Length: 161
Image 1: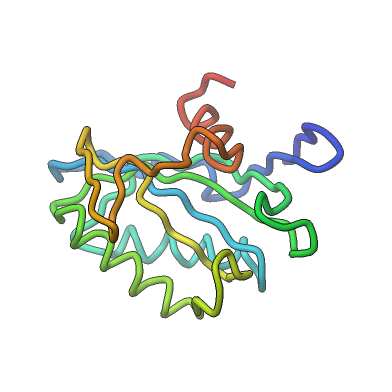
Image 2: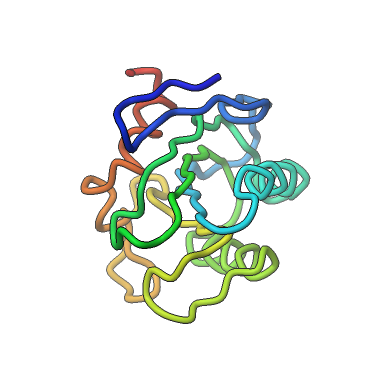
């Protein structure tokens, strides 16, 4: 199902986005932003979802619908597909970051330049109420309020829009 917001943005519901697969026994909650703008992004999201639910350290609590929108950084790049995933984990914030970066690599992500097109982008938006000012991990994500690709899926996840 699709819902067009305006000429450039739309919301898409798929079999796994939104989803609430199971209750978790893990202790720490984190909100993960996911995005991509090259290749079959919807298929990559499905593969990521399956990878998360098979990972013993991560439990998927809930996913948002997909949000299709233009790249905030450049107008000449392919459109983005974004969503958020609420997880619980027994990993620390830094261990989760390392796990997500390894997943990005396996999905073909290369960091050739800042904001380069990518098949999968994973960001820790929030990790419990933790604040981190480490250059490798800023928490909460410093630009989350400024990006519709985060705020709209988050509001959809919460059921407020």
